[in-house]
View 1: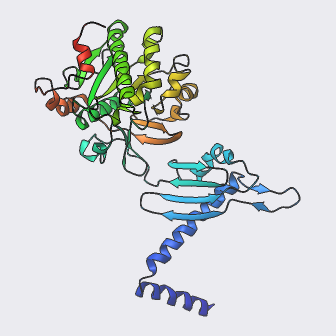
View 2: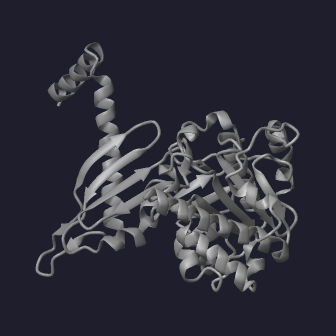
View 3: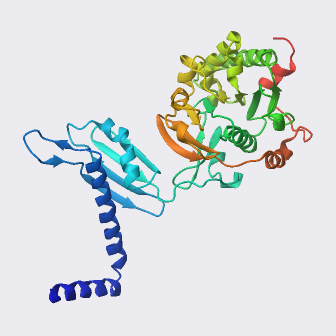
Length: 393
């Protein structure tokens, strides 16, 4: 016994003297966390048990990587075990680690990310923190991811966005961040905005902004602008045919992107003509440079049915009233969110938890001041603006 203790002590002292202690410590960390994962497999009965044997064939941990931001486990899925069982029993992994996990499982392999730090309950919007937005064609800011980075996506690559959540959940603040970022990132010659503020409470900040072609408050006010957007889509389609290209991004004189953003779109549910126009934009708008951002407090299953819902490829699900509403949004689990600004972001069929930035009206107003229409800049006349100046439809 004394010999074993002496050898262990000598090994420990030697590891310090020769610089191998950090590797030993990392190895101990990995061993401890792997043991927790194996217990999760066991407690969740995520293994294969042969009928004629007592042997339990558990997933094999292929690789473990630990950094300050997260722990990543790559494991095999035993043949005969349903991969969906891992997702259904994700609560077991949360019980053994914490609530901030990301689990992806395929037929033969699973990846579990564990984020020890979690998400901040609140952080302020800072445009300078949005690295890479100038490289994106239409940057949409979402918020801080579990890895501690500000997550953005390019709407041209992931067209059309649905933002949903009950009062006080952070939906309005998210829209404020999205529109402010777009205005700061793109010039009026690169981006035109058509805003529908059906509650008369969200978009008053943007009325006199150079990028905005109008803020409209009712179905009757929205009809003509949306008809003109359709007319512009036809014109752009003709341009693509003539140039024999697939997208406006390939045109030598590219027209500006158009984003139609409507808050509380549910109020337009009975407006069949308008809803048909929105569905048409969602179906063919991407190649023509026309995109939708639709928001609502309580999702409507009838409105979000068929092509329109399918074409809203990105969903921001803030706190929903119940699990039914969360499923309608497409972000199951968002009914459990409690922190204002917290969302489940669904993009490319993957759902991740995000904390949206806090941007108050007063701060947004100051950020938008340089873009007020009093500071007139030349705007191209071959865009949607020309249609708005023409009263004929």
